[in-house]
Length: 119
Image (tube, rainbow, N blue to C red; front, side, top):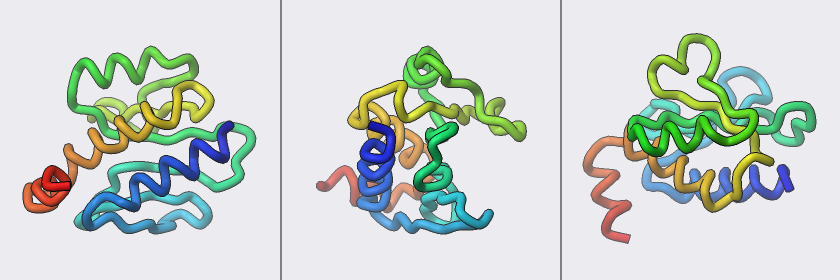
């Protein structure tokens, strides 16, 4: 389930206006918009702890994401800024994509959000 979920989440994230994939730390993939990360995808093929991290400002979405078994505030101090790390096996890919979009909307410039809303 996890590799397929990661592929779906990656494909969805890259379909958002202005999204680009980068590898700032070797094999760890991130997707950015306007040079800012909106989703950490981790390493493709990670079997130990496959998961994603997203920034969720909406209290309801943030609480829902943290309720997923194994989810936690993201390390390195990012958790206090709304970042949540969610195991891929913990939620359906569609829900993970919803959270990726929420994270995108938090970080993307208004003009790109307007493009997304026109779809």
